[in-house]
Length: 345
Ligand code: KG4
Ligand code: ZN
Image 1: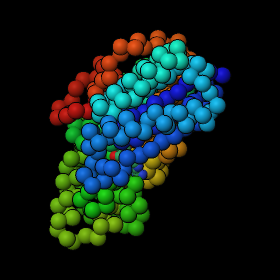
Image 2 (image 1 turned 90 degrees about the horizontal axis):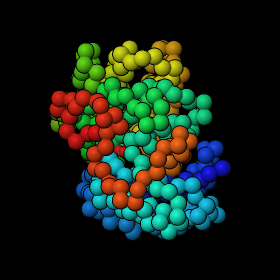
Image 3 (image 1 turned 60 degrees about the vertical axis):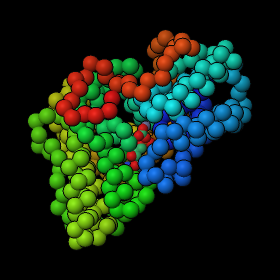
C-alpha cells in the first residue's frame, strides 16, 4: 500500500503526516503556534513563517522515523501550496520540493481547501461523491457540491467574515484570548442562547451567501452595554451563527442537484453545537450526515497527505519542481466573485 507524506504550513499549524492508501494514518506530528501569536490577538504572518522554518524539518524527520520509512519508500510528497499566508506556504512547499528531489519521488502541490474538502473521506470510507459540503474555517466559509476529486461547485461564500473569524472576533470582544473558537464554545455551554437578541444576517434571503460582520458588531454593542453576562453573550452569538448556517444550508440544498450526504469540514466543524445542528438538519432533509473527528477538522497534515492519495487514485498528474505557491487559490475557479467579498478565495 503506497504511502504519501503530507506537509501543512499555511497558517499557524506546522504539521507532517504519513497516510497510506487504505486510510491508515501511519504517523503524524502537529505543533500549534498559539503562544507565539497570542500576545497579538491573531496570527502574525512573519512570526508564523519563521516558526514553520524552525519546526518543520525536525517534525518530518520524527514522522519518518515513527513510520520506519525512508524518502525512497514514499509514493509522493504532498504539501499545501495555497491558499494561505504566503511565507508559511513557501516554507512547506520548498521543503517538499527538496525532499522530492532528494528521495527521487513525485511532488504534489495540494490546495489546502481541497485537503479540508476531502478530509471527511479519510475518516468515513462510506462517504461517496457527490456530497454537500459546508466548509467553515478561520479564512473560509463556503457551501460546495463536491462532485469528484478536483471537481467542486461553489454555491455560497461569505460576503464579509468567515464563520471561524466571527468566533475569533467574538472571543476577542469577550476577552477570551486566541484562538477563540474553542473558548467561545466552552463559555457558551454555561450561557442561555436566548438571553441576548442578536441579528441573523441574510437569513431568509434569496441570495445564497453568508454574512457575519453585522452579527459581530451586534455582539460588540451588546457587550459594551454592560447588560449581559459573557456566557449569555457567547451562547447567544453561537446560536445566531448556527441559525445563519442552517438557513443558508437549507437554501443551498434546495438549489443544488440532489446529494445523499451532508458533510461539514474545517476548523469550526470541531464545534459540538454546530455538529449537532447540522446532524438535525441532515435528518430533517433525509440526508446522511458525516463529519471528521475534531482533530481532522482543524488544520492538520493528514488531510493534505489524504488529498495526495485521492489524487494518486485518479491518476492526477504530479507537479513540477518549479510550481509556485499561491496565496489565493479558489476550489471552484468558475464561481462568480460576490459583492463585498474581500480576500476570500
Ligand atoms: O481550519 P482551521 O484550523 O484553519 C483555517 O484554515 O482557517 O480553522 C481555524 C478556525 C479558527 O477561526 C478557530 O477559532 C475555529 O476554526 N475553531 C472553532 C472551534 N475550533 C476551531 N470555532 C468554533 N468552535 C470550535 N470548537
Ligand atoms: Zn484550514
